[in-house]
Figure 1 (cartoon, rainbow, N blue to C red):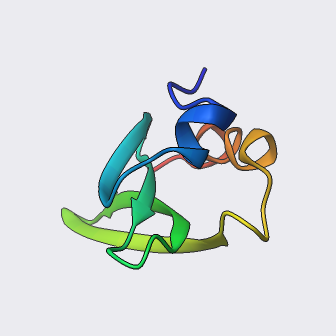
Figure 2 (figure 1 turned 30 degrees about the horizontal axis):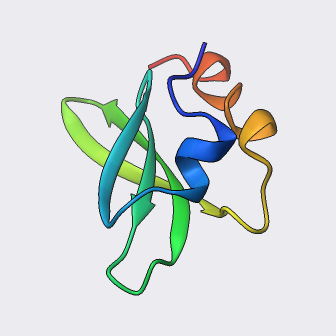
Length: 70
């Protein structure tokens, strides 16, 4: 399961924080937080924005990487 906790997300500093299986918490210098899913399709890496932390619950986003197969 995911490495990030609700408290960890709340206290995250600017940067990219992995939750495992390609799911990242992206924290901008303005402390805006969003979820990003990093995929590799046909040997090309792409980032899929899943929305802001305030719009999505960490628990519901945490299952997304298991739903994708590349």
